[in-house]
Length: 123
Image 1 (tube, rainbow, N blue to C red):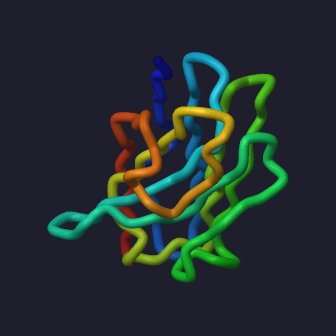
Image 2 (cartoon, helix red, strand yellow; image 1 turned 45 degrees about the horizontal axis):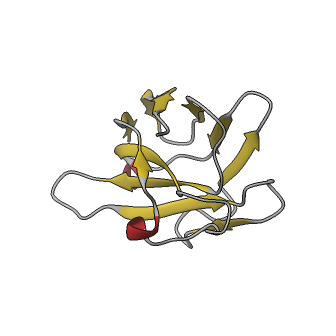
């Protein structure tokens, strides 16, 4: 069982930056970030492979967000730059169940989820 705890959310003005962190209780494999805005479905943001060699992004955040990980600290990060009001959402990190599961943009491929952290971007 892996427990995930997100942190780093908050209120920021458009054009600003935030860095989200996701600390895992133990070793974790491929991980991803998803977000859910009020009244909308959860959507993929970014994902990273187990060793960090591969990363993937939603088109809406490509070039603005960067996912990274520090396996020595069992932590995954999401650096968010040039934030827009449409980035406002609850951000969740997620982890797959095994080393044989790669990074994915589909929520159903992830077994473990954090509780979420609110990001609000004001215009």
